Amino acid sequence: MRTSQPTECRAPLKVSVVVPTHNSGETVLTGLRSFLAQTLPRTDFEVVYVDDGSTDGTPAMLESEAARRGAGRTVRVIRTPNSGWPGRPRNIGMDAARGEFVFFVDDDDWLAPEALERTCERARETGADIVIGRIAGHGRRAPRALFEEPLSHADLRSDVALLASMTVHKLFRRDFLQRNELRFEEGRVRLEDHMFTLRAYLLTDRVATVHDYTCYHWVKHRGDEHNISYRTIEPGPYVDSIRKVLAILDAPGTRVAPGRHRYRLAANWYGKKALARLGGRSLLDQPRGRREQWLDAVGALAAEMPPQADAALPTRLRVVAALARHGELELLEEHARFEAGIDHRPRVGHAEWDSGRLTLACDTRLVRRREKRARAEPLAFHRAQGRYVLRLPPGVAAVPEAAEAADFTGAVRRSNVRGLLRHREGGTVVSVPLDHRVVEVPPGPEGNRTAEMTARVARRLRLPAWLTSLLPGARRERDVCALRFETEFTVDPSSADNGRPLAPGTWDLQLQLGCGGWRFARTLPGHSIDVPADDEPQPAAEVPTPPAAAGHRQDGPALIRKGTSRRAHRPPRRGRAAARPVPSGSGREKR
Image (cartoon, rainbow, N blue to C red; front, side, top):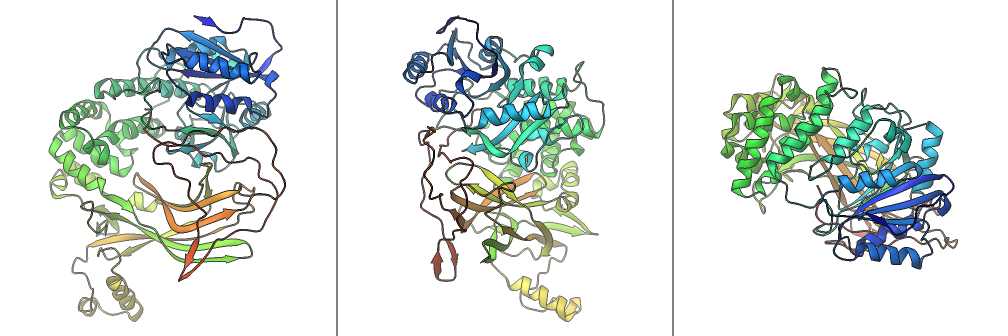
């Protein structure tokens, strides 16, 4: 191992940015340029790149760029033999770090200009051992609910909110890491970052967030072959890694007492990481032989889990758990084909600007498309004695445990509808407060309003059931219904970002529906907010521009369409935004 800079005595540093690299190519320069554009003075931080045996000249590229920008004293490059995984490079980076804090960043991601300054200040302000800066996803689903309000002393032992962010892209107090001997698993171990983060969460009750500024930009590139942990996932070893994660909940120092909360924690990996592999496209996109391997591996884990663990799962995954224990691949495939067509279809009924605020009334339904080009139909539920039971495919419904698990009554009551604003150029997503109600509707084809109008008229006129059944559009299956989720929300661009104005650029409006483990965010077509840039000249600070990735497209300003008229909706001009957006790309998932 050697470094490009000699070891020397320097003034104490606030933070060390640790970045593992491997054959990253020019994408690594995006992150480097974002570090050198930080508002935190360069004398207060260092960047430690640990190269895991690259063969494409990545280390030399980093050294050359750092020298060209006069950052030779800020940037260090450590070369190590190839280990094939990010665990060992991160450990080496931790050992070499000299800052009060350590911030882990992946080699293809980047930081917003104020990220280091804000996370360090938040740690000092709260005394936190871990600070999570708001994350924007580029081709990835970034956590969002975690940043809806400021957190200063979050504790995983009493709440599950922190489960939304289990990756290692955070600021850690270095003394906390050393005192607890926190290390990454080395070698080709899946979920090694989850193991590290879970241990860290369970060893402190002081986790804080930066909720009102996007600090971390999490990028998914085309293919991600350059990524250090890009490999085809093998079912057996992957499920073994899930067992290692679950074992942390019973280990000395991190043990969580048995009970409902422990099972809620375990469900994050048992459900989202294991059982989810047997549902929908996750299963169907695998070749036949690999599907059998996933059933064997996940089925064995399901057999090990106690019944209480299933109660903590989202409802849709309880059905999958029952089928995994049943052990018939054909039934899992039947259910996967059923699930693969499930989505939701939002519809805007009314949109109006008034006094600089936009109000929308909209609704959506869970729908299912039987085939790619077939019309989507509302998802049907059996209704009996005030309960909603999902209408499963015939073969799946014949498995008693699966049929029992399909009771969605609690899931419907806990359903969640959110208005979202997504910054098209920068990737930030913010939530809009709203309430919603659930309405039973006939399970007719989407777009056919006759049955709904018939039911509405019958209710208003208080017609008897026998007469209602004779009206046009009446459904004979009185025990079957679909569900419509109705809501109205208002967006004030001057305060929509946690009390602050929206940054300049285009903000697409989305509606997210969560019910029973299904969570879909869908853009409201033709509805967006175009925030103009300030007329004042912007500061000349350099910000990175990542290369466009697969499927990335720069669209023109979106329009609100109402009837036949078209006009771009721009809120009143206001002061300068806190940060300028930077476009980025999308591609294949790393893990």
